[in-house]
Length: 472
Ligand code: SF4
Image (tube, rainbow, N blue to C red; front, side, top):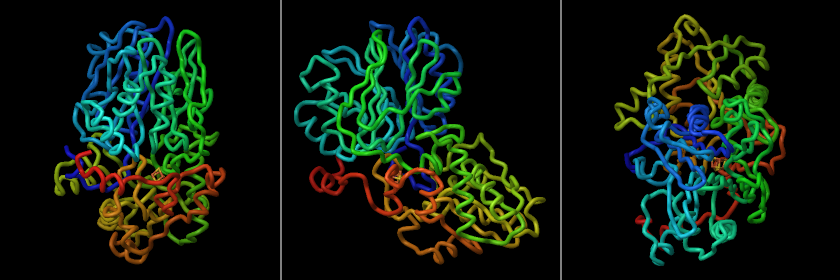
């Protein structure tokens, strides 16, 4: 489906990347298991590429991991001790097979397989220059740009080629790359998108989230530093600060919404940070009600924090049907509405005649909040107070989370207007100060641009549209 037909009702995860170097192991099966653990980061396509020291093979397709690899048939053909894997939610490029990752290229340096989490903010400019210089793109995804920059660098040494490429990239990226002999991980100089290193016996692992390591029984070693390149091959793991770090600006939505509760970033467990977000939220909005409930999944960690702080009972008032696809993949508004309705079912016996505090992680368009408040009221709740465990989203994200100004209810309305629009009896957002306090980390550790417009770097979009139009 082309992006132009979508309406964004919720924030979307920005892909999950994984890589493993396992001497003497057949690693496709490990990768398959880990893609299940990272499935929440992207449900549009999935793929695995495997290298055996001489060649690289790839299998990928549209849909969930279980759709792409319904049985062992494809995995059996993927032989080798190095693998990379990807689950995708498209932020640039249409949701179609040609853009599914890993992307695989053959150039004079050998094979290069690419997986990417994030968005390049100067992709139009780079694409324009590359096409002008003779590159022919296979996809509409900005992830392909790094392969062309490497191929055109003229350097035999891949590290030097990657350095030249990385110096030209702007925006957010966590790349996991593979040649026929090596596994590589590269993170943008701000560290906006996450990437961690783990170890399982003699195997090194790279992954977007540490829950990937747990799924294999692997040990977490450390996070890849902003601007750092790690190279893993028969010489072990070597690291190079490929481009200077500009500080750490992890997307704060990893804690609020994207990541699995059992993952950790910067030494902080996601579930515990969410619970603390709930506690701070409750201190900022001292409400009286009969019960607290959370909208699955992220608020299942946050709502208990709210309940504890307000001394109220926490109830699981929603049952989520996990077998209904995400809201955004529905082809028209009728189906989208049905998608929201079908996914969450409130338990009438819990909410009937009650004043309910409903905790959610964010409001993007307000459509989903409206539906959920309506469901609670139809289930018999007498009043619904909505608490949001993040500040009001007022600015678009250019780093891989698909929001545009025109979609954002928080950019168009103030809090009383949004309260009315979603049909709530009260609406309270977490303050930015409160959100940062709850993480237990410094305010400089995070990108918070969608709340305050302070982007980590100059944004190139307007200039690019002016220069290169919609074609790029
Ligand atoms: S703008 Fe918002 S969603 Fe985008 S990277 Fe920054 S904090 Fe995350």
